[in-house]
Length: 134
Ligand code: SF4
Ligand code: SF4
Image 1 (cartoon, protein in one colour):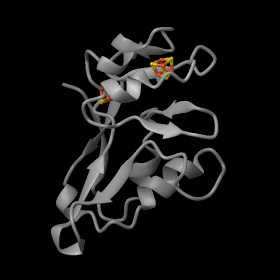
Image 2 (cartoon, protein in one colour):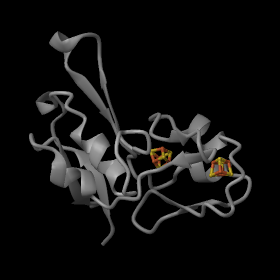
Image 3 (tube, rainbow, N blue to C red):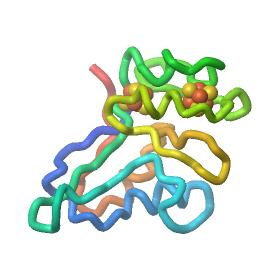
Image 4 (cartoon, helix red, strand yellow):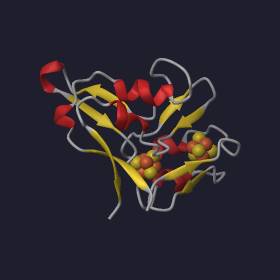
């Protein structure tokens, strides 16, 4: 059964962005620029953080609007990106109601979660988990 990334408890997030660094690091580079996960403040430290990740939709809006079929539904929810087919139109990012598609300006391609779970291993506070869809 394919797994999806889920947020176990956003209240535990301290905003360290380790997940974002880990996500970018899987490409062998530093920083957070290639992350497919976003942690942001919801209005100052006292209000905590929101964690934005792909929800692995069973009927992904992002794939529906893709004019080149670069985004295909993945078995078990979510999508897979064929970078060769992508023309960089950005429709997918506009269509995702969760705001979970980020943009790789360098290559003009979407950054989309590949459900690898790498970030989960680096979150020191158990905010994230890989779960099977029931
Ligand atoms: S990128 Fe957005 S629309 Fe596409 S599967 Fe993930 S949450 Fe759903
Ligand atoms: S940016 Fe690429 S993946 Fe997104 S809708 Fe356009 S062609 Fe499809």
